Image (cartoon, rainbow, N blue to C red; front, side):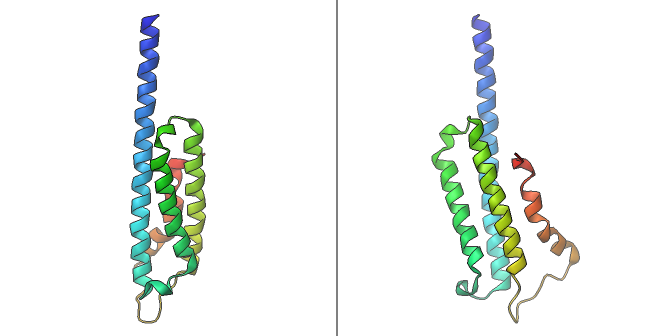
Length: 134
């Protein structure tokens, strides 16, 4: 009986460790996404006041999602937690796709010349979600 309880405790501890890794990965993805967004906006616009409105919405959503994950990390063992994070990331993906359609370089700013880089940028939003599929 004690061995059964010990086995259950080990399984629970392993699942919590896996959930923590997933949350760390989610935070890492958000940080990388934030930096990529800054790079794209700096490459295409001169000043912050020239950014499209969707860029500000994406920045705000990234910061809110990061704060939400940090505040409610205690509940990460619950299955609904990962679903909520996944849904928020999916919404973020749709906003990124909108930004990619709207974001065009201003006069004097260079476009990306290499086709492979441009294709990678277009498929970035689609590569973002595989780890959070619902």
